[in-house]
Image (cartoon, rainbow, N blue to C red; front, side, top):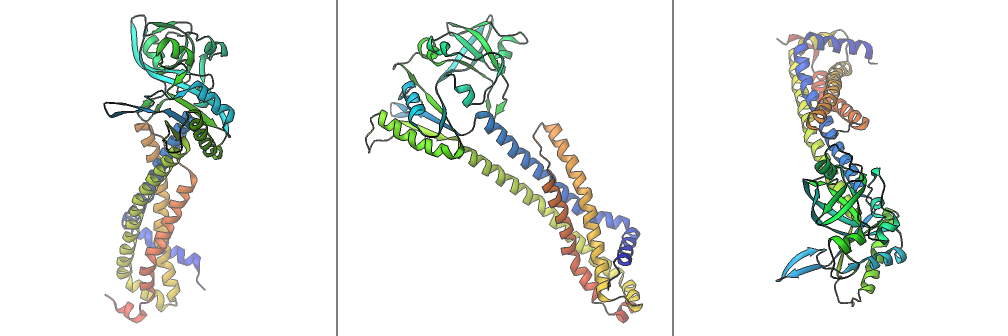
Length: 408
């Protein structure tokens, strides 16, 4: 039976004798484990950031855009031809299954002025449910009332970017801004949502949709909107709602069976799933690239252990001559390889965590360090040690004691 304690002691003593070589041998594992942890932390952080951005935009959303206008045979894009109305939005709310909230939207870019300050921003005419649907929260002041939309009140809620550009550090509540020639009293400011890719989610102004229709944008058709935003009750309900909305709008717009839709529906669930899949693929790719370092480190261990077997041939012969069996020799070299790998893995874990945190701090990026990748990397380093240390250990155990003692 193998005396594990004495075998471990012999293996550790052997590693201590060649400290520099042991350290250099472990270096490949250190780099490999550290790289895996850093890459997975970056990938997990990116995935978390995408999820946060998606949630900030609202969940279970269906965006219905009006048809595309054509000028000289050139398509101007969805939303340029008025085919949707507030009556469509009301019909969807009343008839479609799985719908929680609905808001019509009329939006465009406008120049906004306050005193001698001006700023080009996006103006959104919305119904009261829009803030809830898109997860916007009021920072100060209050939201629109039902009367604001009924009476086409000239009131506005502004994002933090607009507030900063027009007012600086001055409290904007109660102040009057001008959108074109129309004055608007600011009744509320929004909590910041930050950037979503190239889009600044705080660079906007909300006004009642009736005010937008009658006093800001003007519409060729009373009650028309660019978009209708729908929030489904759940992810599962979004597909049901999409199907019902298609039927409702086709019926309301008197479209025949052979006619194409004069609207476009985008399901946020599909977009979110594609984004998550892309980020997961990116994270796996990063981890796979980093794992190559572990394999390279394992090859380094195997090479050094083979050299060690050659250098210590006489030592092996002496051990066999005084009673050590083949499995004892094999265990000794396997333990040496395993200790080198685990020690390198432990140092690599610490180094990987520190480097990941530094990357997050210096580059202002989201880093997510979790326990599973750490355990996986550390465990894999042990497997690499066993896998690549087995052949040198097996080769050492096959040595003939007499030949080994004669080796010069």
